[in-house]
Amino acid sequence: ADHHIHYYDLRNPSQPLHVFTGHKKAVSYVKFLSNYELASASTDSTLRLW
Image (cartoon, rainbow, N blue to C red):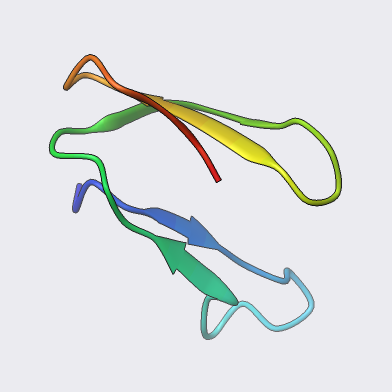
């Protein structure tokens, strides 16, 4: 794992729409909070809101 979140449009999976970077270890949890917000947790003991 590269410690990033790769966000794809599944109609065109060849390239991610966005790559979220910021975690220092593996991402263990991702949840969409709304159409505009994403939360992620990592084994580096961080929670990030995007």
